[in-house]
Length: 336
Image 1: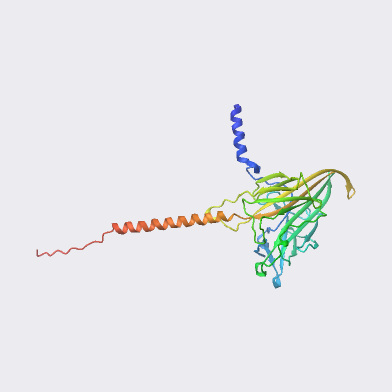
Image 2 (image 1 turned 30 degrees about the horizontal axis):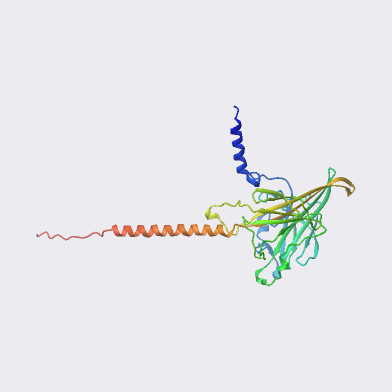
């Protein structure tokens, strides 16, 4: 049975409306890219964690604080897997402290996957990097896996310089992405769905125009943009958390993943393998929560429902009270 062109056109318009700028209506898991996550792979590791403003941490003796990150693969945070030792081969791991000092990290491997475990004694933002270079089919593939994490404990006070809040980068990296700070951002600032996030892509520390950047939400909704002359792009965090009222959690955390890519014609050799082009990729995750107006509206809705139920109960009681006539006893004298 043939379908007329107006019917096909109408169907295409409906499909485009459903997809919108965020791509596929149904999230699809894909292999790669690699990124670092603080989400534990199992309950055993989850039990070691303690909540903090910058995400979950591990507390040791004497109040020492440590962070554990896991190398994962897949662009959709909700369905991304945990890597094995082979996937991590060739990576160089390091961390830079809030003071700007760099330190090499050695990954650990167990049945849960490949991870990093390191102390974070200083207050402020740490940058963790995993970098790898290898030639594939005549193309130099340069991977930069970045994770920015915050260490802040309210028990240690809030007298910190705002210079610790500013984003930092490594000029020697061939490609890096930094999240530009929100207005008046401090250590207590949380990113929420509906916020507009700005990122800058750097090529050896300088803004890079024309780089392709993707942002993928927790459940696979995605947007794509190209950096402007200042190397910047902006994305609005889409909401994809729609629980039932009883299941709503105001501190629920969803993750997003930012992926920046750049290609150029470039001849050379690496580890004895010649290449005619170079492709650079950098990933950086983050997390966000529901906006305060959402859980306030949930609270308002519950309070309105509770008030309405109370009014109905009082009205029903009063109505029945007015309609109720107590039984009256009448005495009869049989002699009358």
